[in-house]
Image (cartoon, rainbow, N blue to C red):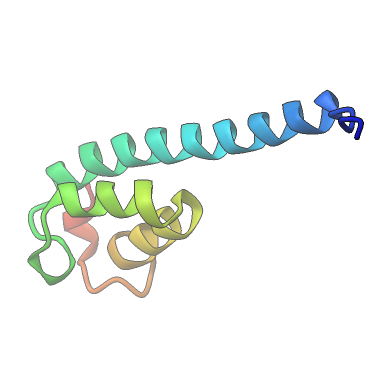
Amino acid sequence: MEAQPVDLTFTFFIYIYYIGWATLGLFGAIWIYKDASKLPVLFLNSKPIWWSAACLLLGAIWVILTYWLIHYSSISNRSVNEKT
């Protein structure tokens, strides 16, 4: 029985894909932690470390979007003066 040849190009792109998502998650978690530490009150009085952990574990794009919607978008309940 002969071994099947491995397509290294496909494997390389799979590694690049996952490394890219991990990098985005890491930078997103750092950005959220720094930004959340500056805010006076977070959603449900959560700590910044929980937002960072969620960014790493649940997916950077969705957590960053949710964080922005809750804390900075026009649906946020913060006044304009607090957004400085």
